Image 1 (cartoon, rainbow, N blue to C red):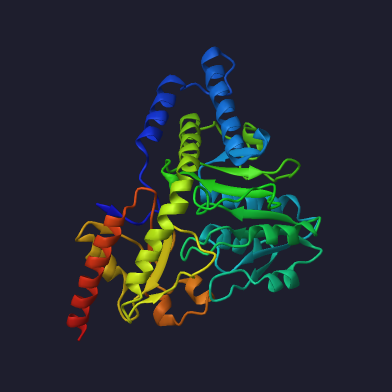
Image 2 (image 1 turned 135 degrees about the vertical axis):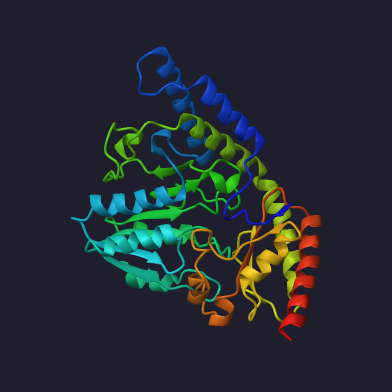
Length: 380
């Protein structure tokens, strides 16, 4: 099997599965219980929090464990908006965010908040001048992703953070789901107030993640109850999942150097091959791009046809974000980048991991050529 849909989810690492099983078996107690079994679980939870903070180079009190990217993004956006609406009701995001950000903002618009959407250029990069024009004294939140999940564009997070910092009422949230373990982003240096991470994007388990919340940031909780996780996310903590998440974070950090040296070579190999076919349009930009994502279109050919044809050879790629992949309309990201509709409705995404090999890419290129040639014959 050649699995190249790692931006949707990754295959869990066996070491991480082992960590989960051991924690679930040996530390099954409720961390809030005061007996020894509960206290053992609480100690493991505390140790995991400290390790996660160390890997992110932040304070352990700034770590809030969640179920993943969608919950983290909703917590950050709605929690800040509802808590600080007396200071202002203006939010800024971009037109190419993940659905969990865009739809959270749309939900707030229904509650009376005003949302401004910053445009991007043809490479998917935020228009900094547009951001400067849109940010106001009553802006309370700016939410911009680090790495775009469809085309791989890396946003200038530090530059954006410096702009937001000039507005005392505004908080800066970053969706770091596609960036963690692939593209570095020092949280303090980039002036980030809130940051979302999801475990299953770097060989951890689904249902695990965290939200970095800078000390001093006040939140309106979306889940009231026992007051766990700084009262930001009440509910009994998933200790085995948290242990697995931190293990995945550690392994991702260890593999990051390998990713930053190997994957750009494989990415360029793919680009060089695809560029030979005049029917193919490459949508991923050439600069400021993550090494693991490559997006391209074959106008006139439905993407699902290519995906299912490759599946016959045990090769797995995708279209757009997995959260929107069952929708048959065009990619909002490609439209925002100024792509014509025939390109936007035919986008395909290849997303690699540290397990991807040159042999995998060679085989993909070979079979993709065969499929395109056969489809051209059928279509005339």
